[in-house]
Length: 130
Image 1 (cartoon, rainbow, N blue to C red):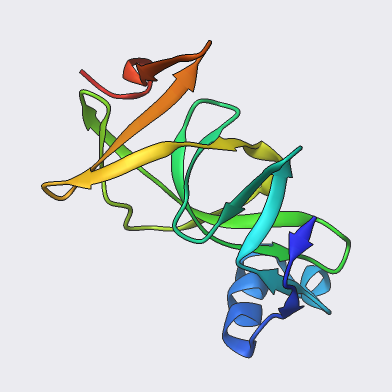
Image 2: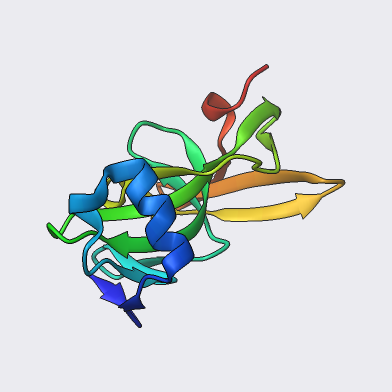
């Protein structure tokens, strides 16, 4: 489910055509906020865990003409100790791949990701390179 949908701009439509083909783009809609799980939304700038364990920064969400829900996100590059480099290159991922958003902070040009697991604050060590 998307919130505050509007038609995709011509510039975004051109990007969508390059990525998904002309047939997928007719009537495409875009939103900055989308519901990704029960009671959970992801919006522009949020950091999120994907179901495969990857950490990404959310940019925007779009619904293609066939109803396919996609999110433009920027995969964060792990640099160790739960820290990630700022994203550079965006990718479209199926919105259903987003597991949930996460707590994060920016310090000295790096993003540090934190999550709560089983009621305790835990750092995401398994997701970052040594």
